[in-house]
Length: 168
Image (cartoon, rainbow, N blue to C red; front, side, top):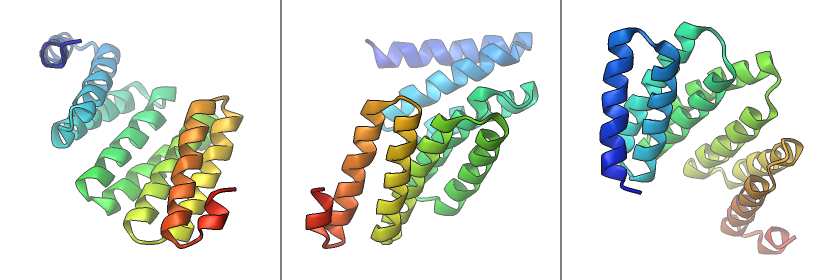
């Protein structure tokens, strides 16, 4: 659809939710806006929207969505080059996942950890993180995401000069 119109609608909804004190809807709208902006490549504003969602979810108490929002924020921080901030967000996401036993958040966090390691030139660590992510995605019954993690692992191995292992 029309991303610009959707962005405008999400921003307006944020304003209305903030004005009426509807924290749950504010969190949802902010998550959606963050995802939309990330797809459009507007990472700074996407991070702002995601951080707003994290704050709103925090106000609601520990929720299942908080871990995912934190991983989304970590992923955006990687894209913006704030690797230390991404690590902090992942630590919080993992704590939420451990509290709630959410395998999907662990899988997502492992994938972003792979991206962090890859950016740091630690290709073996990246491959290990992607392998962990793949396993966790399978456990969470997310086969497409597991395939993405497997591809990321193969790419990291190939970049590390381990092409034979990458093709397994």
